[in-house]
Length: 531
Image (cartoon, rainbow, N blue to C red):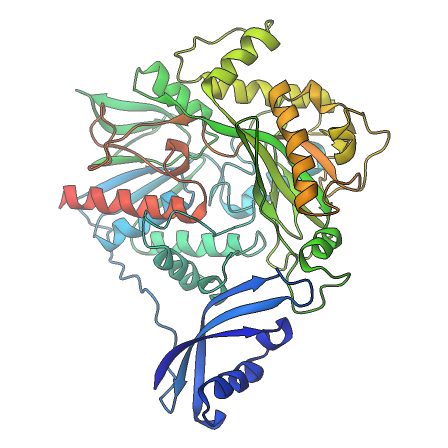
């Protein structure tokens, strides 16, 4: 007999397979010796009760049946060395890598051009950024093999359920080395310490099948003929050609947006969210969420998700990292950008999260016109308006920090009371913090919205609003400030034939899984055209 059942267990019981089998036997009223095995299908934490934290578990059980391995999607990859068709993929993030694998499945050769370095060489540049404040514009937390997610946590949660097959994406990650738990956890997460090995395995498989992955190949120009893209020029003087070009450059490739703009290829300004990253002691978040002083050995570090409407603006948490670290994510010298990540065990003593406010075109125009008249004012119809606004805030944060990637910061209660902090708490941000009033960094409406949002969050989570927490600016790379349009059906740019805008940088994804799904979707569309 095969059957799915749901169980409500204590954390200790959910961590013990024998205990789960006992509960299955009791639930089905069968001898536990008849249960040959089970698979976890879904697992989530229910911490609503103040008396007991529960684990909700759905399992597929085998009773008096041979126990079979978990069914999973299996990639059927071909050798495409001699394929008559090839596709250029600009960017080796999740969209680019999954697009390449999908093309190989369809018998088409992918050629990935990545401006940054491979995951191993990239580590040296990240070390220089953290320890010395040196930003390599081509190799950092945003640029390089695997994209921004490789060294920024590897969160796999997505709400994009209608954009593709989420289970397929998770299964492919497992095939390349991810833990099977990502298949059933409600908020799956790989971890920055493990994701580089998985990305490397993907790249090696692409090359083994006849595809190509080239690093330090920054795209600087498009080869166009009669409004059709036929190739790409790179900064080292090389030229590459393909039957189609997938543009999967991520949300921080400002030079690509500028290239499109100057070549008069249609792009649009896109709203994004801007704010800060806030860090609490993880023990404090645990005590608030789990209603206990010690979460024990069987519960993971607690997370949270918060949202509040303040003066018709959404203030919300973003990319919450339990047991995590705040990282410097700037892509150019002279700017401060903060992001967060966690290792697979999430065992650092701090919990951090982005806290951001939605930004519209009118807000950016108001900023340049009324609050920073010394800055050149971009035309209101300029599709790069929000990108210029984003850059201006990052430069202001850099100046407030004083240089060398030191970030401006305030204690949380001081932030809400317009008070410069006399001291700052210990923080995971390695380059260091400088106490300053963040009202001198953030636009007034964002600062005020965050103040009111923090006060509301403090009422929802008693103890959350505290001077033991530190607020760090600026969290500004939540999504792309530019959208590269494409046709809804054939996914091509409406103006340039064979150009396929893809994933986060084009405005069609918001994380690793949604980017991977969009990469697969674009690749499948191209394959249908070429074949």
